[in-house]
Length: 340
Image (cartoon, rainbow, N blue to C red; front, side, top):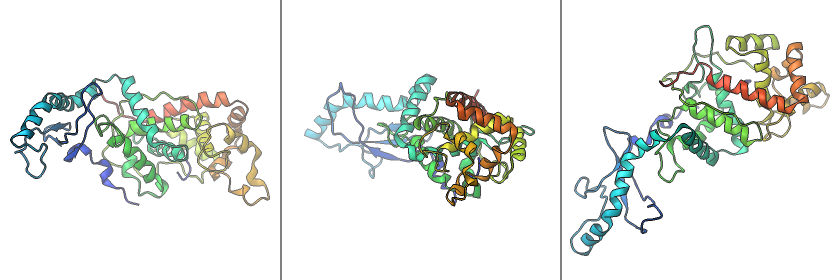
């Protein structure tokens, strides 16, 4: 909401399509080993498999096989390498077999590794700009990952950095076995969950997010996001076209409490946004106060219907948190296409 470079297509490239090599840690119960091996993607599968012959590719030897003592070393370590080989073949199956709750917990853990309070506002902005294209009349746009194709648009300036943060999760860069679980995760799901984690990290409510959204393969039509210059009446009409009420408009605008727009601590998610709206500091003769918020923020407090909700949330942070949670879920489900 509000003003909310060319896209690097490497963000869409699954790491499983590349050859790779590296050292993997063995389970704690097995003896330590310094054997280095390579994992090469199969043409018929996105799951990396371990190569166990030295003759397949002389440029990428997986084991230094020779006769004599080295041969004995290989024979001695083979029982430990076979379980690793089998586990890598099955890793995709294991990821699929993880229960939804376990998979979600693992995803959140990886998001927290790359997300900080200072980056939270940008990640939350990704949610609004991906889902905010939804239109009820033609059931177009919505939470579909199209934002990855729309980063060159003026309204999406700065979001490439936020997407780069989440790309680390998708690639599994910080995992013990990189890329094992999240390469097939949709951008729509990842952005929706990451936005909820950004809110929680900054002290906001815990928001449950359902998984299973499908990504689109093309950008959404332009001109669907609410413009920051709209007055309250136009904002309400715009949100109504997206299936969102005036209450949704006000409570979701409360996300501007983080991100340095002048509504309190930029890394704390609370109800300061509404308290400051009621004070109308932009009407002060202080030049800095006139910089607080966007024109769309200031427009809300001039509308009687919006003002009623602003006052309620300024006086009751718990109500704001609960209603924000409900509106956020509605937002990230807008226009979503779901897996069967």
